[in-house]
Amino acid sequence: MTFLVRIASALKRRTAGMQTAFGGTTRAEAAESALMDAINKYQAKVKFGFEQFPADSTDASYGECQRNSCCAGSVKEPNWNNGPRISGPLQCGESGFPCPYPSDDTASYAALQKVRTFYQNRLPLKEEDDHYVLLVTASEPYCRSSSDACEQALDAADDLGEMGIRVVVLSVGYQPPANSCLTRISQTGSKLPVPSGLKTLYTPASVSSLNATVAEIALALAKTTCTMESWDTPPPDDAQVMISVGRTSVPQVEGTAQSG
Image 1 (cartoon, rainbow, N blue to C red):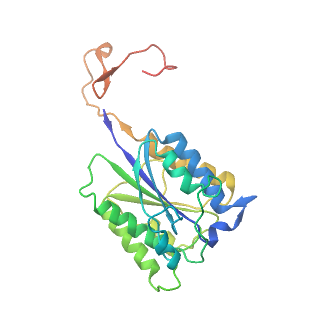
Image 2 (cartoon, rainbow, N blue to C red):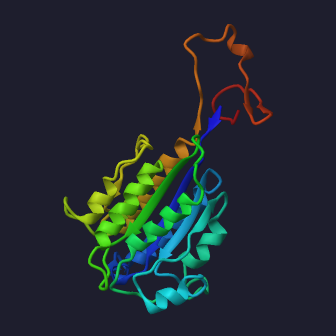
């Protein structure tokens, strides 16, 4: 039995577009709730990391982001059961963490660049591990002081793809045009194939659709964390087939209503 570790880094933006009203709440609050529901449910099966842009006041990059809103926070390394470490910054305001000040700039390109650096510092990546970046946004990459935000985002996404990392775009309440930068980011090639049931661009237009979409993405990752190798020739006696997790044997049970 081979376990494939799914690593999903959620990049969340607190720019002006994410503060737009969205079904009785805001895009940011709806995204926070949907992400935390998925993280709490699947954190034992998926390694979740986190980065937000711009950074909040607890982040090492906060000073830089105060001076320049075209700035992304630090990457919190993906790990098992990372929900408590993510929930404070993600649910700022509610949890006592101060929120980043909303900006008209969308530093998704800076976030992707920091994630690229994060993975470059960990090369070579283990072949048996699968890595995903979930970019949560509500607008195109943009910075008033830069004319090539899109090109920088695409370069970072291309480099991530070359490393075998798949970028998935979740555009909350915003339908990007076919030739837009966000659409092109979602079309970035990668050595990592798209698993069954997963798309690379999602555009939920309601809170219920957003909740269902995030659950769908998390399930697609968690579902394939475990695969079994099979052979053309079956074992001589089915009763003697045993499954082990590490060095611990999984007990056989009768019926399908139990684990084992």
